[in-house]
Image (cartoon, rainbow over all chains, first blue to last red):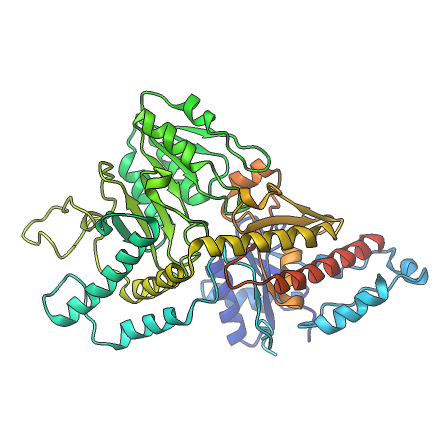
Length: 115
Length: 399
């Protein structure tokens, strides 16, 4: 799965859902998420996509008249590794796993190791 | 993978009943399907038996609502597409430039946006400040009344923190002053017992698709005799067809155009279900869910819960945050990882979040129904604990 390291934000959820439909039809990999407020004060839904594909993606959206508010580089808050992560790991702290869909089981077992 | 939301095999933990309720009782789906497949016409437009059949379905909804809210005459319940439309009819129908209106600092935008628009058109508006827990002192209403006050509007329970407003007291104050009182019962209809006479209110706006368990696209407005908001929509009503002016009698004055017949057939079934169970039992159940949630939240040190701690003072809605992680991220992970549906952000109530001190980031919100269980709350608690622990690690990692 390509890194969905870009984020499109919108003025309304209507535009967000249209963007998803339009881009999926053209073969892009995308994912709707609750919009981070600091990036999207206008609307509660945003669309993750592969940032390296921004030019063709924006062209498709413009052609299909889908309005966007903004475009950003994006990493989910709970998946960010800061510069201290490496030394924290060396000190025995578990490295937080990347986002896994429907990962309740894996999450629970990771949690047992940590607390 | 096309990137769409991963389908979960398990039944979702649906904690967003404050936005719309799910599931609905099976009878609701049956009623909706029946209203489409059985021979049905357009109620009130033709004299043939198929139109009459549709009309009977709609009357069934009105009658059930009248029984639920303790209303003598079902004609005084106007059927709308949602609570927002009901609120708009009451506010735009009663207020004109030069009038004064009173509301609170905990209202939903479906109250605030019309009032701010009316204010821009010359209505004077007083917004009564509530405490950081969302509590209103009814005496503030008394002090704010003027000779030109033509409407007092409050929510029944905040859609963010669930704080119950002192509706009976405010109704008494308004009655003494001869001022109509509009209550927004979007969060309480079907979840908290409401008798329009016991509470003494004049106008009650409600959603059909939350606590009343009907489909989306339904809502209504009860209007007490003697209160006469003008219509905000005009059109064909199937009555007074010889005239080109809107009729003045209820419910037609506010019901122009064709009604959502399948929607109201479903709503009738939802309300019947509630009448069978009893709203007081729903209330007891939701109080138990609140107690379970408070206990779970106590076990998570970084979980900050807003609003009053006493379940007697709040409806089955809670707002909270986890220190160190934004509400949108909590909601995202709850959905993607743990199959828990919540609503994040400002909940269409920016003024409420200003009152609570959570503006502009907002909070996570859980809203429950009679179909939620204490087990689900325990499950969500484990999810929140995991997210909180994860947030702690990310901070330790030097973000």
